[in-house]
Image (tube, rainbow, N blue to C red; front, side):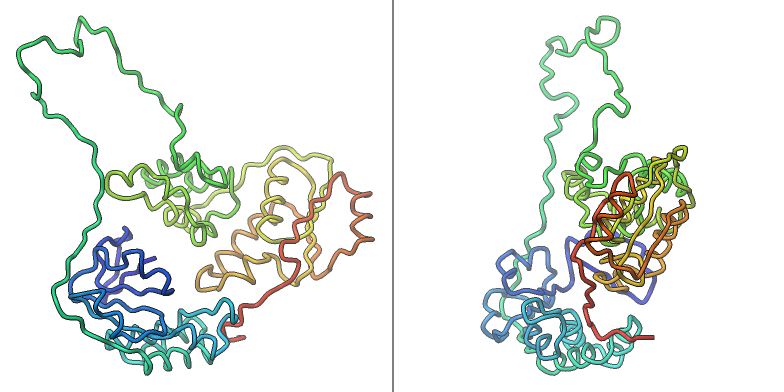
Length: 376
């Protein structure tokens, strides 16, 4: 992951190949070339119990800092003992090495609702971080992007007739094949999105058309535009030239700024019951409504959304974006029964009174990350 910060608005959303500083959240990642592309004199902050002096020889020409963010997170009960959440502790360590005031860290954490143990963890890491300046000169290893060999215009011209016949005596003719070959981004998208299509619409500044294309296959463009691991970007053939197209952020833009309604088929008489309103249940409800089925959605909790609401922090997935996309689904005409758990007897009754029943209960329990967020 990467981020930029500046006193001025940042519009460049491309990947960062030559960072100023690097933060390593897990010590097992150290062997993966974390200094690749790092500018000389940059900081390498590592979450580890080892001292900075033990690691400085590995990174000549750089500044090395260490902090045991895992222990700090466990001490403050952030996450669990097996999966501690170290982010806020590392924020405090970053503030120390980059000489930020702690009050600015407090303001930032409070702004996203992280108070109590999160602020304590940031303060502890600020005090406990160890720093070492290594000696020597940094050898910057720049990322290499492979390029295919392109022959020169007159290369091989020794007076012989050209091997490719052109003009009036041509024997071959290029043929444009619009939309016949599936691009890798479309092929690998788990949601089946027409990535090529909605990107073409955005290239014409038509966010409404882009959203319309996305809604044919996915009810969650704003959600996926924030939390999807984006396999389409890993498969993008632009990687071989300069860098992957930032499909995820563009999908988020279309979801946030486009205006469109889902295209539904005429109503059908069949009635389907869906149990569970997480991403699987909501996606099923959406596509069933697009096909015209009558749908009743059952949810054991008081709110619709499942793990989209209870498992993803609001700073990663803003609740207004989630609510907007859930409302779009419900406005298709879905009957909702919330705050009611379906037992075995009722499940059998639903199977008897409905044409089909889909059970999409996921973890079957509500979970809270308990990150110290304010209740207001």
